[in-house]
Length: 118
Image (tube, rainbow, N blue to C red):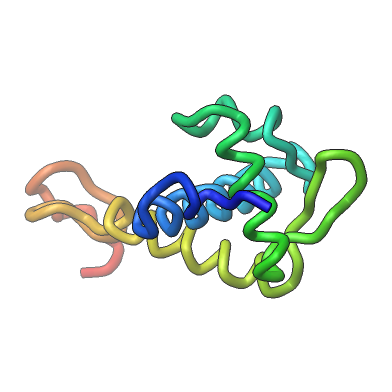
């Protein structure tokens, strides 16, 4: 059986694996369902469906996804845990306030006179 690592660098395969897990986690969190297929994930990934399919198969082999019938898969408990961590890690930087910004989000610009956190 061909895997993504057969046709790509190990670093690319790892990045794609993590990207797919993060998208599955986001997809589920947005209420789009908990079953994933190459066609459902394609709009969110910059790669062809066959590559997505190979990545999904690899994640099934690693125990992060489980077969759900047809070409669909779903997150296992281990996959959900890893996907949640990857998703949170990916957005940590975006959630940090910039220099001079109120980290509580309760005031604008440099005027902190209305801050509720003192």
